[in-house]
Length: 166
Image (cartoon, rainbow, N blue to C red; front, side, top):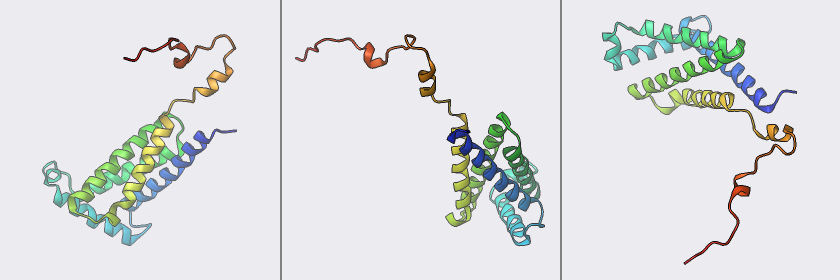
């Protein structure tokens, strides 16, 4: 039977992956929702206007929106379907994207309700990455080691005797 940790990582990976595939697709095409697509276009225009450095680098709102959308779709697919280390890499890239989006929302002065979802999914991505990268529990190794090979704990190594207080 799978450990609770494995079940948690898999559930978070699939849920987050599908969410980012959905959000990335909305940024790329109006087929899912014309209203959401037009809202994304408007939002990315305001991001580029608020950050003139992007214009100087030759990045317009269309390129920014489509780049972020394509990266979300690609990382979402990896998070959903690809096993192993690539999930952690995709998780990291999505976390960087969420931080960038939070920066953009703050830059244009959006109210909290406009970017609360980014905060929540940023926290979920962080939790998934921390759980996935956490080393295995040592308690199971202790139980399986043969008797006599155990090392004494820190408290057992402490010198015995009276302590002088003056």
